[in-house]
Image 1 (cartoon, rainbow, N blue to C red):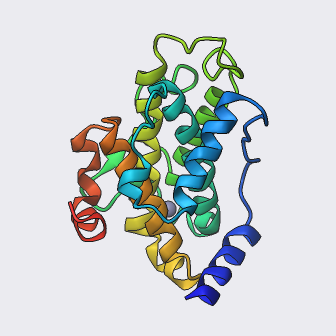
Image 2 (cartoon, rainbow, N blue to C red; image 1 turned 90 degrees about the vertical axis):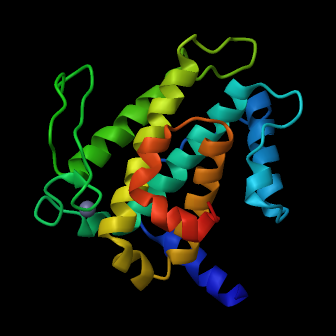
Length: 220
Ligand SMILES: [Zn+2]
């Protein structure tokens, strides 16, 4: 088991990520909270408990550190299969035959548009990255308040990040298994799922594409 974990870590650190990792500035409140979240996890506590808002902490802060953390981890996971996610293999951002997502933003895609999965995920990650690097949205210190639309925006980011899990699980899981990444991806998924459901951040209908798997993996 220990050796397996080591191998897995090697696999995931060796593989390319397709963008740099966003880090928290040391010494800031948010950095402390990030460390707290990490320590809670590495302490082996139940994931279900680890996602609960700590006493007297602000929900916005708690959501902010998790959005950044999940962005980094999902980015890493997609990086391990991205060579296999091409315009030919995945001409649309789908999750099986029943689910297909169209991209929309304020720039080049004013109307929801069908794009290949790799394009969709690239647009999605660029969009999240620009949000988390925007100090008006993710202020660097706690004396600056979060904007009023912070939570709705985070809900949208998490909803879209969930779709990466949908695509990876339904279309590329053989590749994840082939590189021994299954336990890592499952743990990340469970953490994500418990976090968004505990804090009501993603609509139930959005979670539907992975409902069967979630029941097996998370027990509900
Ligand atoms: Zn794909």
